[in-house]
Length: 69
Image (tube, rainbow, N blue to C red; front, side, top):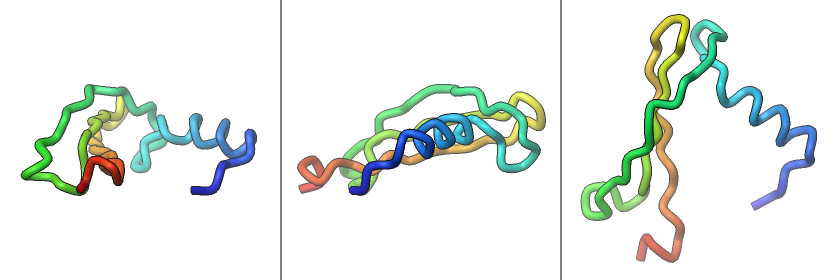
């Protein structure tokens, strides 16, 4: 994996909280662990809700390679 330059990291942290629909702020709702049998590719799902338009976003975190075997 390629490491991002510091400026890119700062931009990423700013943009990850921005709603793609309206530009409002995404608010973290929680993280939920996923069962390995049902979801062999992903191990956590994060849910976010926009504070302005109430859009709902789910982010799936890829299971580490050492865990997927």
